[in-house]
Image (cartoon, rainbow, N blue to C red; front, side, top):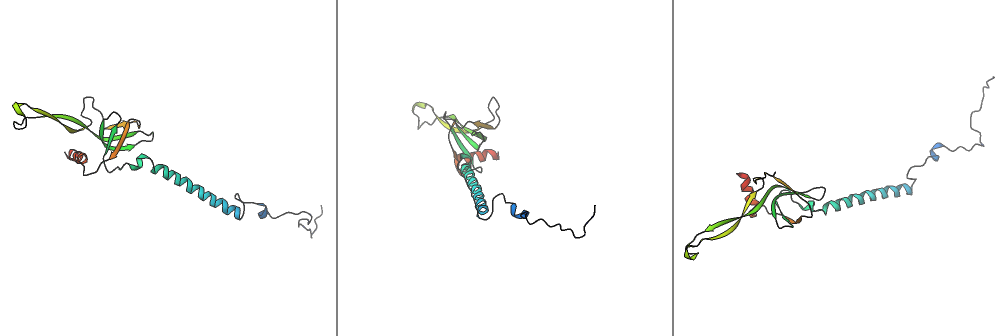
Length: 169
């Protein structure tokens, strides 16, 4: 084999080979298509974030003020007080639980009650959950179908003050 000194290694003009950079295309296209795809992606992300925020802000857990106590009224008319939280399965968990118990108080006031009879009245007493015979823990789980309604309690209300006084003991 004989080597030629002035060998021409340029491509033949009949071969129309385009440069590599012009054959490559971006995933989103070029120019206006790319801009439209980027803007569309941003809009989609914003819509998704907005719908998630709307969903979260419209669940009942959004309105539970964790710094306050809540009252929970059940469909069987039982009333409980404590710290409420919404669980992921749409049930509720109440901790630091208190309930009302009616206590009879006998009054014997000769001026108020004729013939030395005693009159009894019932006064509601706030009782801490956990001292019952069966020894429950200080937490309750309610299915959302059992809850008639719940409310945040004012810190200066009678129940909130009674709970705070109990905790100081």
